[in-house]
Length: 88
Image (cartoon, rainbow, N blue to C red; front, side, top):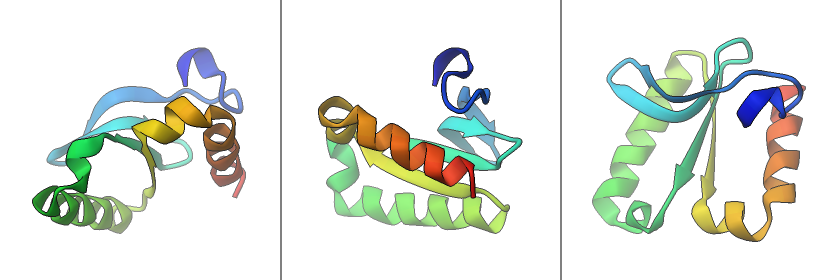
């Protein structure tokens, strides 16, 4: 995500959007990327994440969520998914 390495687009890190702070966002493509750790498996957190995602979508953003383990174990597939969503 650094230095425009993803399709030459700039992503902002820890950026406020409304009442939320998203992990990464590209405003030109209206794409939000969230990286979830193990706390996101908890019921209350899942409910909050769903609300957050729905609110972001209502503002015109597409939201991609990845688990930390996906980033660590298969970054290539994560990047493919991000690139595919940037070109849509």
